[in-house]
Length: 151
Image 1 (cartoon, rainbow, N blue to C red):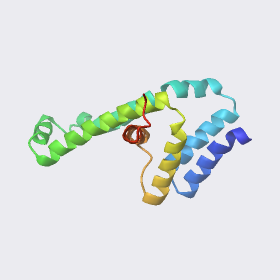
Image 2 (image 1 turned 180 degrees about the horizontal axis):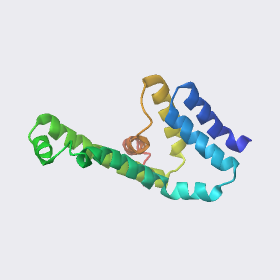
Image 3 (image 1 turned 30 degrees about the vertical axis):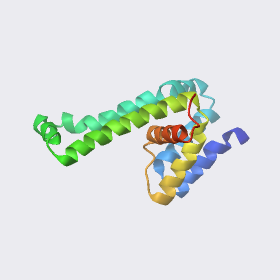
Image 4 (image 1 turned 135 degrees about the horizontal axis):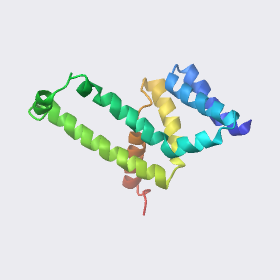
């Protein structure tokens, strides 16, 4: 039972703070663990991040497929201050997420802190748990600034 406690706590926190994504994720993993579907858990460990990013990018690209955004809109992005700032924001976010992925590969134990921080941010600051890689990237930058990064 103690092995399942963390997932159970995350499930309960997700339910208490009305965060369906946290609750569904923790609950799904708990069920997979309880029914001993370790091969599915192993597959998720190896591929879930890629699958999640695929779905995230697909969701972002849907307006292109629905012809709600076209070449003219893209061109206008390069001609406005807001568009240029959005491009810079995208570059910074992609860089941070890349740094976060490296950090998670080198120090997977930081996931615990990221999960705790995400639950706090979701529950107290009305955030959404969509940015674990960005959170890991910010953590990696902070580690480097504080001299705690990879050497």
